[in-house]
Amino acid sequence: MEVGQAQVLAIGIIFVINSMVGLAPVLLKGNLPEVIVPKTQTRNRLLSAASCFGAGVFLFVCFMGLLPDADHKFHHFLEDIRRNDKEWTTFTEFPWAFFVVTIGFLSIFTLDKMIHAVEHSRKGGQNGLANFRRQLPPAESPKKDGDPEKLLIGKDCAHHHDEDEGHGVPSSVIFLVALGIHSVFEGMAVGLQTQTEKVMELGVAVFVHEVVMAFTFGMEVSRSNTLNRIYKVIYVVIFSATIPLGVAIGFGLQNAPSDHRDIISAVFEAFATGIFVHVIFIEVLSHEFSGHHHHHGEKDSEEEKTSPSETHLILEKVSFICLGLLTLIMLSIFLHHHHH
Image (cartoon, rainbow, N blue to C red; front, side, top):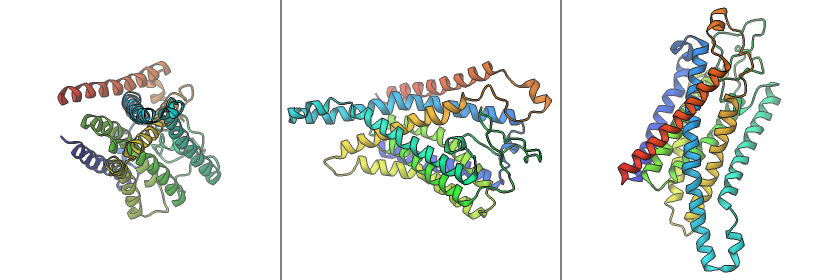
């Protein structure tokens, strides 16, 4: 399979599956979790497992795929400069690839905190973008005594939310723009690849992460009482289109007839790597392992008895991280063996 064909296939699969997963909560009016898995504890652990598996996949892609590839592109470009002009030797010895990775990380980190600040000031204490990624609506309507909303993945909630109020349009727009920018750069990382096996590896990683994201975004939009169903569908479809848009932009940059194409590709790939680092350590792992010592809302006596220990939960999450990492290692070995 040619690189272009693999990228088109990735675009199609990611867009269709993300749209279906994101639209399901909208069409079922936010009741999808209870329909599929009635027990809150089981539902939380399943989504936590999916998130940790995705983190393991991203660990491979980031540190054994994107980062070495971006560094190689920078090294090749800087080596040409060094050969042509010895005066630039000091400049070319600076680790520019890692510098751009850092810039990418700081950029998305700043965006995350800005979203947090805007939402906090607007709603008086609601968690920001990173916590939104980890949330689902409670299994039942909040009680009058103010029980805290249950989080999807191992972290207790820090605020109350009145389901009757719903989420306003400005909030949904803010999240759509923030997550959209994030997803465009993930898609660009796929579009910038020049080898079929790299496209497949990155495509799997982005697919796993974006399916979880599409589901949580669909849940967020489905709870809005200020949007009608048509606008909710439009929001989800726009979000699902951000990855294909990023792939198309990356493909265009990689194949643009320009003398500076290689360095532009290297810069964007390194920048996208910084975003992957943020996803792994700030959005996923920090939230997965930050709340084991808390009680996650009120539990009935039956759930309390069957609740696993903290040690068990930690080992379970680490196991899924390792499983995601191992899956991508095996996929990489298979694709390279098949290619040669």
